[in-house]
Length: 107
Length: 124
Image 1: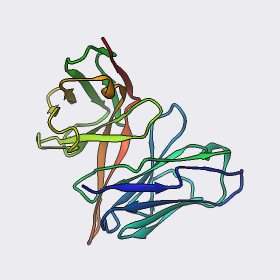
Image 2: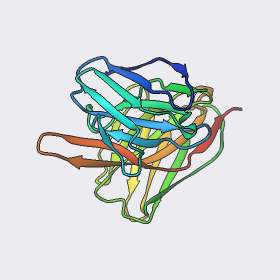
Image 3: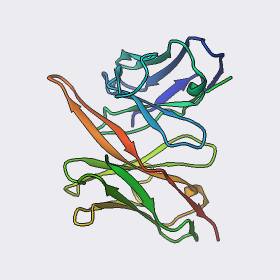
């Protein structure tokens, strides 16, 4: 089974900060990596699929990169509504599979 | 616009079977994969499995022995059954649509539409 490990588990940041979250796969997943945002008490929301393609309506301050086993989600300038938990998910094992454990972005 | 709605008992006694249904409105259940995901209190997301509109399925290996996901295209619904429920199955259960994009070299899958989630507590 493919395991997904995110780091850090949590981070503290301020509005305007550049934030980077890392996701590592236990084996190569090529570019089959999705990112989701979950605000407290809310439903997860798709941010990025295929490593770097922004879902429609997602602000351009979000970006994704990586390939193989190492991936990053970057928020270029943190906004108040971005305080949330972020999950990566591999879609290499057809068609979808395991999530990372999540990264909580806090003030 | 496609919307999903989970329904089912909020309380299940161990070791009974946890059963949930996801109703799809605003679009057809055909041509997509459909998934169940759960989130225990204070914890992360766990993928349970998915069903294709044709009925083919794939499950999380850690739950495979207890899980059945099925689809009813006539009702535009798909369902989850989890047998021998225990307190560890207490969670918010989400249903979601698995969409896809095809490129010349890649075939991307992602969950783009989610239900609001339903809380299931397993307790005697």
